[in-house]
Length: 246
Ligand code: 4HQ
Image (tube, rainbow, N blue to C red; front, side, top):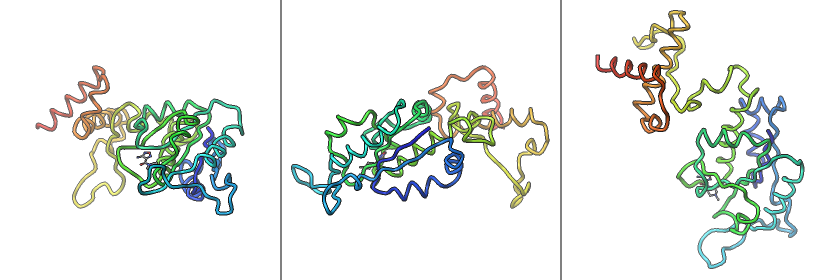
């Protein structure tokens, strides 16, 4: 998977993308990340990328020409299935299903906007899809782009080397993750659930699945409405609820 990011803050991406799971995937060349600075596509001495909004009002708008040149340069590097994405609160809300859809493209060009946003004509002419990371206002599209890169990357085969699959993760099946514990086995008088120390891997897997269902039921009941539990899952959840009432 290759990510091309159009950004006024390339350093931010070099930094963030050098760390953790994504950093390792880049080092291993499973993922490629390249940044394109719209300032490098300006003609004037001041390297102007923004201008005042027509119609007046506060704030500035990103100029169309440097952005379009940056996008076109990024797109033409490789001839592969590409989506050009603009991060904005007006986009489709990102969730794990959206992440998996995006992961199917071999290449994503991400436009991280600043100021009040981009000229609407660029949106119409050059942006394939608009995505949002949530209903709140940020000062730029850089963090949303990094969120997208992180979430998409971890679904790719080979990125989570230590796991058989990302399928074990929270949300992969539309459920929350089960609780986790590590040493010490007693902290402040509170013990780790004994099943986790039993060495019985079948029992442990069953406990975790039950917890995953139960925690989802307690904390995010809206998620359960989106999925159909199988018979086994339903009886585990019933058991979880029954144990609460004991
Ligand atoms: N912005 N999800 C405004 C966001 C945002 C979001 C990005 C702020 C674009 C111009 N992007 N700029 N929420 O708040 O994606």
